[in-house]
Length: 277
Image (tube, rainbow, N blue to C red; front, side):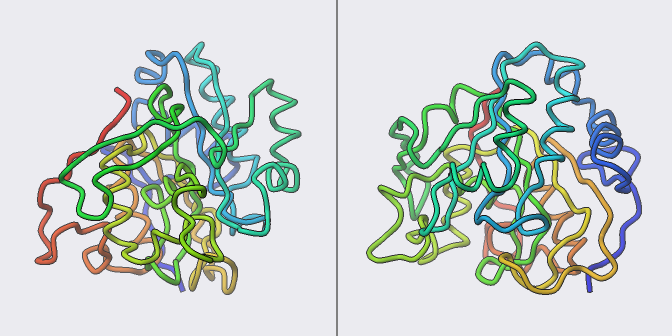
C-alpha cells in the first residue's frame, strides 16, 4: 500500500490532489511559479516515461503531457517537442508513441516526436563521475529546457523510479545496451544507483511534473497498483526533492535509496548537476 499525502501549498516541490490532468497540473505549476521560468525559454522538451508499450500507470499517459503543453502555451512561445528513448529491446520508440496515443497528441498540437535512441549525440565529460566520467548523450538535451514527466512507480532494481531515473531515456542503446542485455540501457544495471547519479550530473531535468494519480506499489513494469490510488500530482524545479517526495508517497524511506542519497553515510554530499538555465 502507498502512503497518503497532504497537499503542499508552498515551497518546492508541491503536491496537489489529482482531479483532472488539466486542473491538477495547472495548480501544481502555478504553485511553484512555473510561468516566470517557462516564459524565458525558447525550446522545451517534454520527456514522458514510455519504457514499454504498456499503458498508464506503467507509462506516462498522453493526457498528462497534453495538459503540460496547454499550460506552457498560456505563458510561453517556446517551441515544444516530446522526446523519449524506450528501454524495451523488442520495440522501437515510434511503435510506443503510436500505441500510447502520442502520435495523435503530436498531430493535434503540432508537436514533433523525437526518438532519443537514434538522435545525434555529443560527448560529455565530468571526471567527478565514478561510473560514467564520459557519456554520449543527445544534442537536444543541451539545447532544450527539459520537463521530466515520470509516473510514480516502485522499481525492482532501483527501489523507485522518478524524475532522475527517467533521464535514462536519453541514453543511446548503441553505446549503453551492453553485451546481450535484454534492455536497451542494460549497462546501467551493473551499478544502477551510482549510474543514475552520474547521468544526472551530466544532465538533469529543469522541471518535473510527476504523475502520481495511481502509482505502482511493487515494481515498474506492472503488478499491484497503489491501493487506494495516490491521487496526486507533484511538481518542482529540483528533481531530487521531487523524487524524495515520490518515495514518501510510495511509503519508502528516501535515505535508503542510493540515487536519492548520494553518500553512503546518508548525508547530502556535493551534488553538481548540469541544467539548461
